[in-house]
Image 1 (tube, one colour):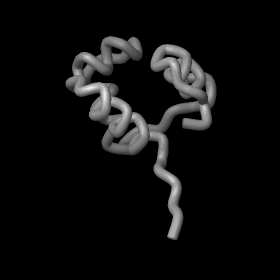
Image 2: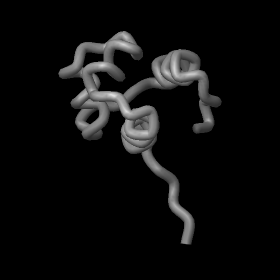
Image 3: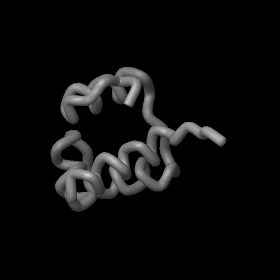
Length: 64
């Protein structure tokens, strides 16, 4: 069975793989820690432009 992770789940995974705190990751992405926390919990959504910027900052393909 295959499934796709949602953007907020992928962000959390990348953060955990990089062994970073939410505050560190938020700073890297140019977000406040509170805004990043809401994003990671799926309480807010990102638009395509923001996802592109995150991919560039994280140096990962947008598809990831």
